[in-house]
Image (cartoon, rainbow, N blue to C red; front, side):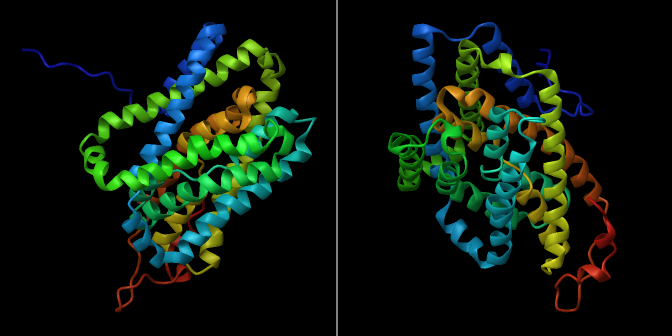
Length: 348
C-alpha cells in the first residue's frame, strides 16, 4: 500500500497556510458574495460561530493555571500595559494620518487592531523558539485574551465612537450575548467538557479556524454588496502597510528595551516582547463583526495585514534569539543582569 501524501507548504515560504486560507476566503467573497437570503443565513451562522468561539475560549482557560500565573504579576502587568495602553495610544496618534495617508475607515480599522488582545499560540511558539519564559508567555497570553473580552469593547466605545458603527445599548447587549455569556458558560462547564476538549484538540482547532473563515466571508460579502471596496486604492493599501510596519517596529523596540529598563532578565524579556507586541486575529475578527456590523470588512483589513506581518517578523526575531549564548546565572540560580550578558546587545 502506498503512503498517503499530505499537502504541506515549503519551509521557506514566509506565509502561514491559514493566512492563505483567509486570503482565499476574501477572494471567494469578492467573486461570490452572499446576497439576500444567503446573506441572512451566512449572518446567522456567523453569529453562532462567534458564540461558539468564545464558549471554547472559556472552556479551555484553566482558572487554576491563571491564578498560579499571577505570581509573576509584574510581567503580566507589563504585557497588559503594552497591549491595552501603549498600542491604543499609538492607534490614536494615527488620526494624524487622515486624510492624506489613511482614509477615515482604514484609520478606524487601524485603531481597532490596536485595541484587540494579544495572541496565545504564536506568543508561546515564538517564546519557545527563542528560549524564553514559556510559562510566562502562556499566562500572559491567557490574561490578555481574558482582559480583551472586557477591555476591547470598552475601549472601542470610548475611542472609536461612531466610527465603530455607533456604540449603543444595543451594541453592548450584542457583546454581552455573543461574547461574554458564551465565555462564562464555557468557564462554568469546563469541569465537565474540559476533558473532551483536550482529547479532541485537533478537531476543535479546525472548528476554531473554520468559524473565523465564516466570519471573514460574511464580513467581506457585506462589504462587496455595499460597494465599500471601491474606497480602497492600491496606494492606500501601501500606505496602510507602511503605517503598520512602523507600528510593529515601535512595539517590538518598546517591549524589548522597555523590559530591560524595568529590570527583567532575558527569558522574561523574550516573553514580554512576543506577548506584548502582537495582536490576535482569532479574537479580533469575531469582535469586529459584532462592533462594526456592515462595516466590518474594512475594519478587519488592517488587523489581517498586521497579523501576517507580525508572524513573519517575529519568526525572524525568534530564530535570531535562539542563537543567543546561554544566559549567565549567579550561584542562586537567577539570571544575570542584562548589562552583564552578551544577549543584551542584540537588537530587534
